[in-house]
Length: 228
Ligand SMILES: [Zn+2]
Image (cartoon, rainbow, N blue to C red; front, side, top):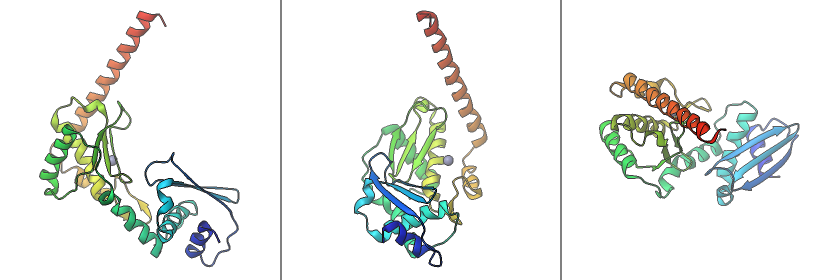
């Protein structure tokens, strides 16, 4: 019996397993990432190569977690608990290789003001000049990334973005049912504890639209210069 079937049958003991399976490890997926797909009667599973040496019982938890997504179920098996526990500990096990003085300073200010200095420092890095994704927290590699748009912003804006991402790190494993709730009520309440958050939200929108129009000006200048 392969591991996908094993995971399925432990999850749905009363059901027959009527699927073909395919499993592939690769390096294309992000850290500790995996995805699953059901097409006709075939279940295809892709896992980041990092999963290869992880204990089968934890892997079964991961697969069950993914199977629940495609079969729209809810369950909390022992394996899923093992998997959740494992994922929770990735931040502790992940070596901190990326840091960055301005982001680290922002992290320290926010950690002191809102988290009583209790939060472990994650990896911190600048992302791309992204308008769509201003910042993000990836719990698979315990990394907060902030768009380079904010490299020259006033500190309180950087701190606010940092605060938002630190809340993700803080709340990462509060489940509602089997779904992760990223911006649930509790999250929003905590977010609004940041002083003058409404004003800062507006300031952020201004920075974005300003940068966007600067981008456009640059393009039209290029068009003029190169007649394209
Ligand atoms: Zn968010």
